[in-house]
Length: 242
Image (cartoon, rainbow, N blue to C red; front, side, top):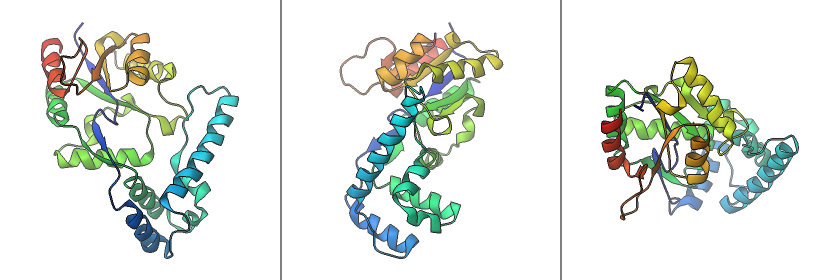
């Protein structure tokens, strides 16, 4: 069946995730001085540990309410650990949290992703996103796409699912059932839609269970199985099936 839509994961699919910067501790201290006017009250590892504890409590409460795969809203978690953030404007708080996220990882657009996106658009294929993500993720994606000369406007808003907006995320089948409903409103069926992701458990198997075609993005040097491979192999598959 020909492809009419493609739904992308973000991390380790569109965005390559790298290690934290080597000077993360110094940049954390500088961030506090620049935006909060004082030395950091918590070290970066202590901040992470406190956030993990609060996330655990939030997840437990959500599971008690019947949410199988809960997602938190990162600005609330960070504010719960750092009450100092209440002194900032909304824009400055978002900037603080974006800069903080860059101390835990580095990201860049996957090699071959921009070319594949452009080819899909040229074939009038609808593009969407399904990601376990936070508000800073969208800015990371925007910045990476801008370097390639494209924007997030490539993606149809109705076909974008960001876990922080819903309180749950993948691998919950509700993620892909929600996308199915949105696709049908555009007269597209799951069988005409390719879900692209790197994780078998989070992306591929849940999507297949809801009738989607799938492609697992892999970077192994060995030959990949059918429905898997790097961006170059995906581009070849799309040319044959779109």
